[in-house]
Length: 463
Image (cartoon, rainbow, N blue to C red; front, side, top):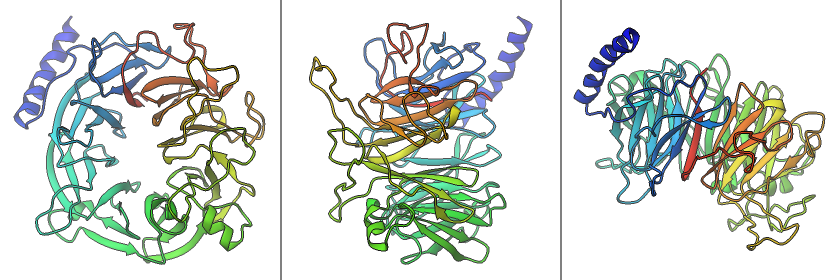
């Protein structure tokens, strides 16, 4: 009782501070008591299901005994701060009625501690390594006398804007290991904006590197441990350019060190240009896994689903690169589901989960005939040298589930991955690459009993 009273007295001044900064104290007044939690954003209110951030016990796949945390009208994309103290949630649906709210959730208190209203939609925001500041790309934000597009700077301690830098059509952000530089990627551009956070508001905070002939519609970057080198992912034809690739760029000397097209090793230049693809990547040690969908010159997918028994007319590609040698290691195409890939996570047991949206879906009639194919936007690649379930070494399975993949979260204490696909949370067992058997919901494999909503993202918030 005394501990609860002390906690209440401690939180009260903090709540008043948030309110004085224009934030919100909405949310639960007590915690769930769960030691290892997953936050799950639900962006639709319907019947008894309220929009908000739900709490799940990620140890036993049970919904937590707490009300959803308020986080705007349509909570969606989430980012957990490096110290795991807070979770940032963006609410927005791209319409004129969109609230474009960024909510800061206090993870310990399981409550919305504050929020700011952004000048438009965002699909990318990053947090400084010290967990004090968020940087948000808003490509449609109006700028007086200039083209739209800004990076907003938000203090997480006060839930308030502390700066802004104009970058036309800025869409994606990548922050280096120390937080001293942020690389910004704009739509339909071959240049990369280099943002120096300490100069925002007091000097020339933005310079540009690359350009045509160096990058080809870059979308993301990964950094060496000393931050001297950026490995820049160029999306190429899939994003309106020519050829997808990965560029090793020296940020100290401002020079391109090496470039490798993202297609199978040994490809001739002509075939490589038509097959290269890469919109989302994951780096594990010196290995980069790069996913994408090769398009026709006219913008339509052209990659055949070689080796797969499917009714889909096109597929995507996974490319594996060795960053130490700047070379592609796979000698044959690795076929995955198509669509625009923007989710990728490495789960336990060497299983790589790859998600996309607007893929080619195969939806069987109701009731489905025996053996009918079901296909959506999730692919699982087995990185191990041995089979996992029915998936051979280096093989791919596309689970029979429909819908866009909007959330992926490996559960670090277990051999499962939480996948949000088509608005539902599905739980995959990394030892069989299929839905897990949940004893709490034995009639619905891979689901959590009593969990109803239109879900979008999922994140674990505890170490």
